[in-house]
Length: 307
Image (tube, rainbow, N blue to C red):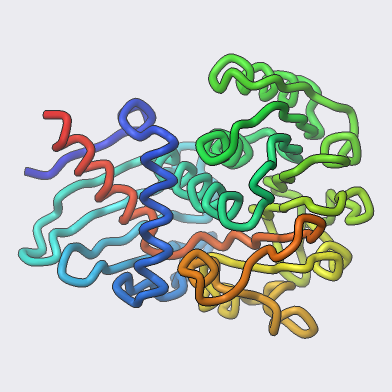
């Protein structure tokens, strides 16, 4: 029987600790080459593109995520999980929630691996779905004391701060400029749709960890080269995808490419992460392919365990 999940059903069944644990397992599986996850592909279709990411966990499952760039108001992502032995479709998820939680979970693993152990404050630039899941998942790996948030819309940043307080029980406040959001924070989240820098690297304090979720290419990036220059540690969840960007991803080009580590390798202890409290670390999130399917498989297993 094929299981179907809506956004509401994903939200109800998939908590932050489960999501983070699944993404930790996915990163290790990719590093061990048990998870096959090639870079995303796309098909141009006149007024937009169909985009596909796929993955296969050896001996267990395979599947894909698809979405389009037509910009239609009712367009939704589709994630499909196949049984690796029979090919049967085990589950389908329709909507944005699974993918957003996947991204948040990857960001939280980066925080857990790269941020200081005593990190307890988060500064956020952005107030949308991706910004929320970053904070939601980070609260599962660090005992957060305070969140500050800035976005261009005063109403949206106030609503974001209120949600953090109501749902996570963490003190949160909206601020009126980016510098006020990030200065002195232990963890900084950049989760915007801005094609130009929203951050002055001089405002990032020593010892800070940064999760960069939005645009990060040469012609459009939510941060500038100054952030990469300030970073002592650079990591991404998929070096293959980072190198496949067109135009190139900033961190995957000289002079930074030699310092860009695989987060899975850091997690496995194969390469170093943070080695001193005052270091600045930056995680360039690209959305490791196959992780949405990995998370859908975990969702199915969680559901089966509760029956």
